Each structure stands twice: as C-alpha cells, then as structure tokens.
Length: 290
Image 1 (cartoon, rainbow, N blue to C red):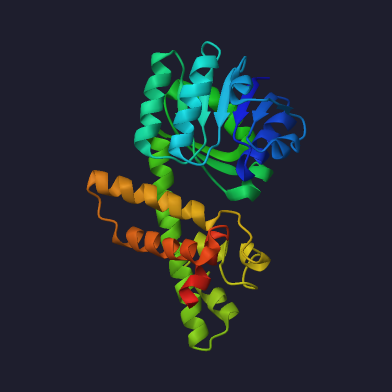
Image 2: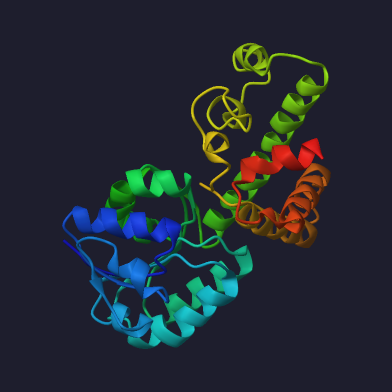
C-alpha cells in the first residue's frame, strides 16, 4: 500500500481520496475547506499542503485552475516531496502549463502525469471515473493501480500534456452535443411534440449520443439525471465554460478552426452570465429556451 498526499478535496477530490483510503492506502489530505476534508472517512487531515506532501510516495492534486496548480507545485510539492515521488495532477488545465510543470518535475527526478478526469461527482464517489493521462509510460504504469481504484478506465494518451489535450477536445465535443440535444427538445416543445416520443425515436436513431441517452437535459425523460433534480451539478456550467475557454485558447494557438466550439463557449458564457454558474451544464436547455 502506498502513502499518498492528496491536495484539493472539492466535490471530485473527496470521492477520489475516499476510495483510495477504502482500498487500504495511507491517504493524507489537505484542502482550504477543512470541514470538507474532515468529512472523508479513513484519511488523515494535514494542516498545510506541504505537510500533506511530506513523506508521500505519490502526490495527487485536484485543483480548479492552472495558476493554482503551478503555485501549489512550486511552493509546496517540489520543495517538500520525497525523492522519486510520483506526481499526478487530476486538474483540468492548459496544455502548456502541464508540460512546463512536468519538465520541472523531471529536472528534480520526479515523474509527473497530467490525468484529468471525466465522470462527474457521481463517478468520483462510485470509483467509475475515466482518466486521460499524459506523461511517460513508466509513470503511467506506476500510477495505473491508483487509477484503477479511482476509476473504471485509464488511457495513456501520450507524453506530458496529452491528457489535458484529450480532455479539452472531449469536453468541447460534449458541450456541442449537449447544446444540440437541448435545442432539439426546445424545438419539439415549440412544435407541441411529446418529449418522451422524441427521446424514444432519437435515442435509437442517428441522433443518439451520451448527452441524449445517458444525460438527457429534459426532466422526466430517459434515465434519471441532474435535470430531474433541479439541475444540481454533477458538472457545473462554470467548469464547462472554463474547459471550453481552454479549448478555444488551444485552437487559436494551434490554428484549428472550431466555430461550433466557439458557439458553445458563447452559450455557456451566457448561462454563467444568467447567474447559473453553479447549475449543471445540462441546464443549458433553459438558456436555449430564453
């Protein structure tokens, strides 16, 4: 069993750290919200990020943005990590920052993986997340047993930054699909159609996609989703807006044409501007209605 320092116990990190502890690993956590950290069974709560890192064989971070990741690694992780410790950053950040930190880690003798996740809060709690991993093959092999505890699938996507690249491409596609499904149901409403009938046809026809069949934004249709719980977030609109912003930055930097990605970014900007940043991203259907 490994000794693990886990920094960032938000909605996602809590479930991930809890599952590692249940599997028998010695997990020391730190978060600015000590109440949330203390609510996780089986872990030790550290008084600082540096204390959580000290003595750990593996350091896992789950933080909200690239600047926070950079600050934590440079101020707390790099100076206090044990020799040869593996670093796994599960945050969703820009590719350039992921590559820069991995290079800094390598210069100090550490393997570092960028390993953003998909699956939402429910996936973090159930241990069914999907990990998109960038970094060395040896580092991935070392981290794989932990990914298998926290998730149902882990894919080695390539060198440093590749995990982040795959994540922002995936979420751009997801956002576009969710908006298309929302627009379809809104049009059906305007036409006076039964939404269940639309679901029954489309879920078995050419419009079939995850945003329709698994995470339908229309309440009372298909499997139970966030839409049936007042759009309580599994994945908040603010986070989708952030990820789309990262995708648009990458597209501009690399000369990729993403007009529908830009339209999705604008749509989620509108949703956030309506004061619905903390609603689930599937709540975009309400923005479409207006």
